[in-house]
Length: 303
Image (cartoon, rainbow, N blue to C red):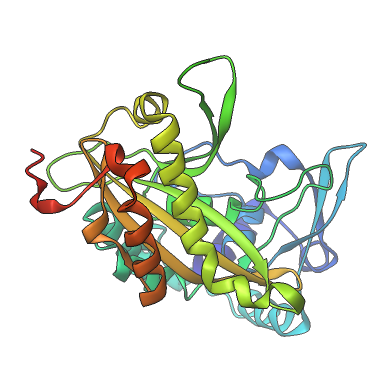
């Protein structure tokens, strides 16, 4: 909360302005600078920590309206702003001693399961574009910002070309991290899906992580050269499926799966997930003859 309050006073906002909501161009949601070098704008802080949600989109002006989602959050913000003490101000760097810093450390060193436990403490907001369906960059913006704050550079919505015709698109990669790799640093390619916690789709919540990873494996099977070129032919990269469960306008991370891709082959005996059923299904999938060229066991002797 302290960095948010600091930025509030630094930018000279009023509480009435914050309480009534902000109308901003949609492009202002796309943060392209390094938050480690310069403070994030207030509206970004508000989105990252769930204090703002997008309530509407003006297509004619390409603007979004940000508002505080409920009275409880409004009272929490009001209390924090009213009790701000500039004489005991916490610095921007001290904020990284929080879970955000730990998240970055775990991801850079390949401790994905520990990183997921931190991500599951966040409440995600579903962003939407009325002219588009499925998961869009707006949907995953909060995850993008969280990773950037954790010093994990990433890209969303990267287009994947077909191997046989580079002018045609094979699909989109929801999110991929773009860290400079070394002996320890790991990168990830992530597929994301959202399902509704109500109604007929409720039983599908636990399956989203499976279908995400299956889609990435299919990309690798059908377009191996294009995908590996996009991933800069990294020796080791992790394929990840994340399933988000939505209810009203919020979302939480409920299912995940991960498999290492080494030298262009998925190690299907190293599949991991928070669901034993997902692990079994993915292993059976990758053990099928049609996936033989892009999957292997660790004992297969691949360097």
